[in-house]
Image (cartoon, rainbow, N blue to C red):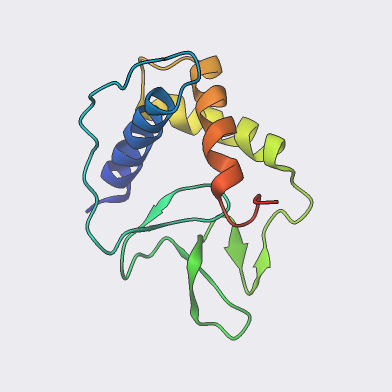
Length: 125
């Protein structure tokens, strides 16, 4: 699966997650959730999907592949932006999210990630 296709499915999943977990919605919304290969994991910093053998996976200090983080967030066993806050990461990701979901506004993307990111390992408290 090409990176662009992975991103597109990923951000559609974000949108679905947001709608299903919206506090504004009192009813369950029956949406089709895009399917990822069974072995797909997600970057525990930015949430990007990382399928098995992906060239998008980051690296550990010993040069081995990281199963938890993407190449953009994690390199040589360290975060590429160690001082970045979760809020800054969300703002950084917004243009990427809306580029793959043209019907989504910046505010929709922000709200969705504010719900999703606290579940990721790097941001979990």
